[in-house]
Amino acid sequence: DTVIELREQTPLRLGIEQAALSTNQHYEITWDLDGTVWEDATQPELVLSPSQIQKGRHRISVHLRDTTELVKNDPQGLLTSHQSWEVVKSFCSGRLSGTVTDGRTNAKLRQIPITLLPGGAIITSDDSGKFSCQDIGCGLYTIQIHAVGYAPFSRQISVVDAQTTTLPLVLQPASDAFYITGTVVGLVPQCTITASGTHTAQTTTDETGRFTLGPLPSGEYRLVPAAPEYGFFPSQRILTLKDHDITQIRFAAIRQSPATKKK
Image: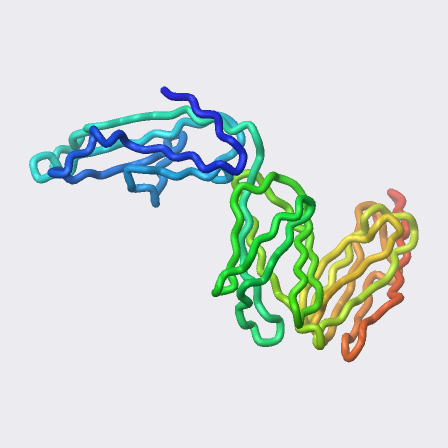
């Protein structure tokens, strides 16, 4: 078997030798990865993105079976060609996809530049608002969007090996977008603040305990802080966003003792 070392952000092309194909015959072509058939791979050539497979060593095989009238009823068929490659992926990479929509009209937004940080890679939505990106190194990233007529958008995402992270990105028109800001006191590390109601959003506090949620459309929201080993006062806040931002929200984090947790 041929051993191939995958390279980052470089598609791999594998194919059946043309000498094995005849214009006078019909063929059934099957590709498999480590023994599992690729249902949508039926062509003589396979183009493989590194982000489609997990980090490690794999075997990719192609099977060419003659399905002409003379042999198609043979239980074994006529296997005219079989080839395997050993493929090694020494790095971790995944994929990103989603759709950008207007938060007021639900219209799909075209030609919206989406910045991926760190790195500064820019992905642009197509005419149907969709976007995708292959072979992104695994880890945590921040997506940022600055589009004319819309409030700035920022969201943290996680890219996982051989998986697609799907993101519905909703941009709020600048006139309809509001923010909720506040502070968690008590030296709790990275408290999670979740907003539910008219819209759902989540963020974490920074090193000083401050947090920002938004942009959010007008409506009713329930804010809940959470962190392992901590309770909070108040345990939640019910807010109404209308006409302006809401600032100076305050939660106090209280370290829970084992006796407190049993209660």
